Amino acid sequence: MAIEIEIKAWIKEPQTIETRVQMLPGAEFVKNYVKRDIYYLPVKIYEEFRQNKENLEYPVSAYSAFRLRDENGRLIVTAKKKQKFKGVEHNKEIEFSADDAYQFNSFANFLGYVPFIEKLKKGNLYRWNDFNIELSHVKNLGDFIEIESLQEENTNKPINHQKIDQDLHWVLSILKISEQQIEDEYYIDMLIKRMFPPR
Image 1 (cartoon, rainbow, N blue to C red):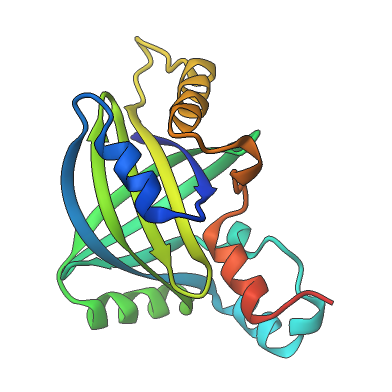
Image 2 (image 1 turned 90 degrees about the vertical axis):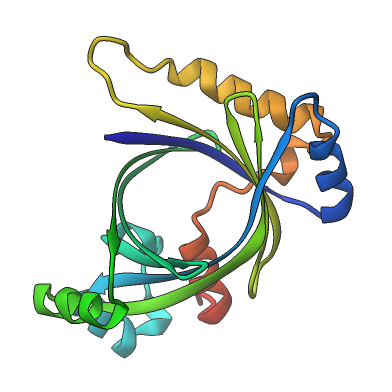
């Protein structure tokens, strides 16, 4: 199982930050992307939300079991077990490809899940050392940098989570991004709060 260890932060000047990324020794441009994510909720939770938005209990991300991503025409289903430590996400991931969005949606409905909210993210991906660096604009939210280390769960070689956390913060620092810009909330919860502010 893959382990995604990631930190994200708001950025005010995307082009300036991208130039700094490009200037990192050995940094490589990988691709640009458009990621359209649809998050699914259990029908019961979805109905409770529709009927009682003003008393919605956050975070909604706790109820979202999986998402369907369309990335440049490729469909990917992802399920995550999520944890956070001081602004760093530690997620166990399972992913697989899908051939047909309509058929997958029918399958999800059959299991008792319905599409709930959509996230649209556009940006550029770079690779530097052992890190993926994404510079993204998220519709209805703004501009972000995400720095990610992908690990494989291996009982013979435990993952040094603390060291990776320190490395992620170090990358932010050399890009001159302050700790105050770190965002530890999941995108889905940020989007829902923007759409339906808590009272």
